[in-house]
Image (tube, rainbow, N blue to C red; front, side):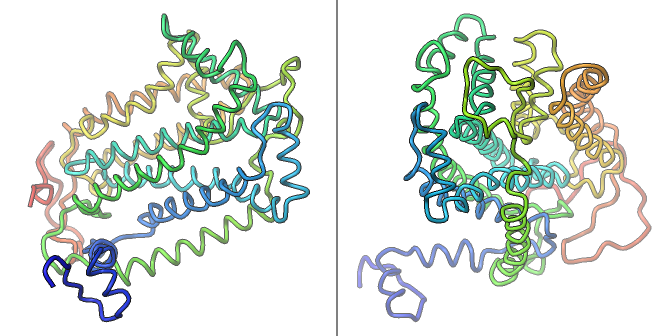
Length: 423
């Protein structure tokens, strides 16, 4: 009939729906027959793992919100009630609590994969920038969620982090007052953080949708970092990568379950089992582990405004990364000079995490400043220089053709790699 979409599905119910609203045709096109490079390794599982983790966090968060009281007089006790009296409340909270850590583990590995294989380069610059927006939204959501149990570390963490905005001249103090909803971290602050913590995951879903749209427009990168040239270079997403992702999800869920059932408080802070007390400051105010590298960067600069700018700059520099890296070759597999530096970057970030967990004294101050300097040196100095002088290894002719050993020698310094040309 005129006006109806022609559906290829044989199931009468699915065909009836699909002719009027072709959601099944769209899903088949984008997740069934969608051509993907045939040489994905398991690093490409982590995008799917992040989406699974986001769904777990939203579902458990909705049920936790049904029993949580966003009031400073009742918040801590309501969390204890969830743990003790609500049916399976302990499981919901432990899954949600440890899900935040698992989410960041998955996303940090996903980011490392993008850095190593050059997934931020042409034509995927916007895809990468949307991913950075997702990371910032995740961090904001996680910070606000950490405040909700209203323990000692929740309260003082909120006090310290929100006070950072006061470092900005003129606008700083009004921003802090707006965040607090008054003149200190109190009931209005908790209400605001609860509302935003509930809202932002749905914003994350929307931005994730844009991330996937951008991915399906430009196509996926691959471990070789070269463009798809023929149908032999690709496989349909289903069943090949749905099965591969399923294997990764099973392994991920086993690790997640082990953390939830055998070490649920391993990544938490004991001070958060003490009700918030504005009159008693903890000996050490330390954020969650996934914020520690940024906290170390903040403390590495003696000046408060300088430290805040450096901390935010460590995230903002990722936005311009596609233009800082001047190399024409994507994958670090073919970049012998760049490859060791990416691992030095990883080591420096890990050391920054260790620095953030310790008091700013002695060797930790020196390590923090050295690793902070290297972090910015890597992006702002080394990447532009390496791209100009590096002599990449010869790239394979196609994804489907195996790389032959020997022959060819390195490409001339700064030479454009043929597979990077736009199809």
